[in-house]
Image 1 (cartoon, rainbow, N blue to C red):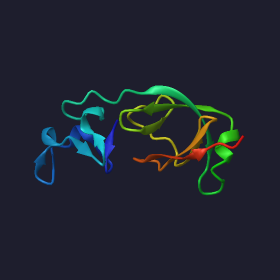
Image 2: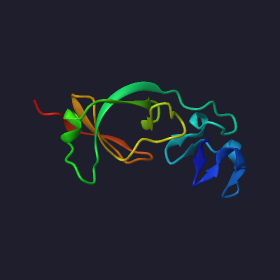
Image 3: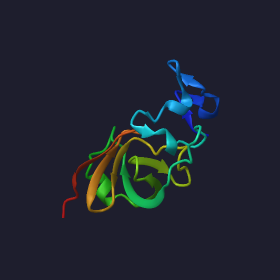
Image 4: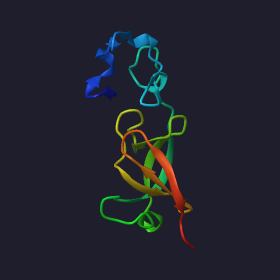
Length: 119
């Protein structure tokens, strides 16, 4: 189940005196894409494969040669989830690569391109 600051979205009626039905985004994520949000249908994800490198201990380039794993990606909101976790379980913070480019995922809201993989 999707949560906001640890609270299940189905329990949210207001945020700072604004009715939940009038909130269209939370941290740049459209509420219509949050499963369980009033009027929301949940995100639409596609299955993608990325190599992964832990950003705390490995250089970004390590993601280019890491074995690919499956993930769910919400391209509308640029959110990365674990395989089968679309809308509920974010992938770990770190560097990801499709073999051509390296991306950084902060583990909760920010997906950015870092650069290209070397040849």
